[in-house]
Length: 200
Image (cartoon, rainbow, N blue to C red; front, side, top):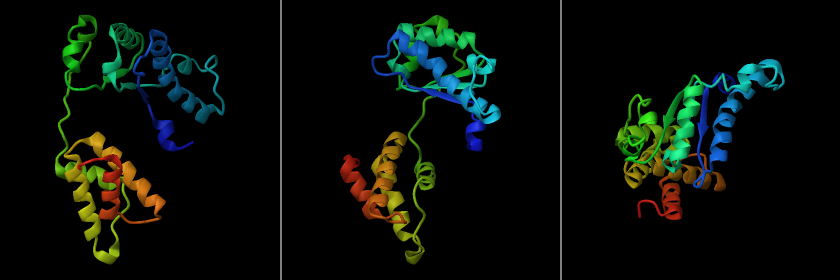
């Protein structure tokens, strides 16, 4: 098992669009237990939550990240609050702008929120650094000019939007793999933009 998995203490949960009370009630502990089960398997060679109590109670999870928190209705938010109260872990809610105003209407939950942070679009240098890590390196034959031009095209097309950049980079990598290219090219970025209708 990879060392990164053994050291992981962060669980990730995304509710479905029409998440029911039962789905949330089962999904939150299950997301946390996956961390504990992986650790148990690495340390003991098997998973038995009746023997290893930490797994049974999600004890190895230190942080729970809930994406698309806007999807949670009042009862779902109450379940998150109850889960937080019964477990010793941090909880991060990720949602669209304005979610903090909605949460403010639920005093029991809002009183437990440490802070709210609104992410701004990434600056060009930040987005370039993030995107470059997920793409093939420059071609030494052209002194990296094509690589630089391709990165600049991605930054221009996505305008600092991380989610859009993530989709575009995934598509660029897919195109490079299909065509068996080992270096990033502006043509691959153009093809990815055309396929996703990004920056057009």
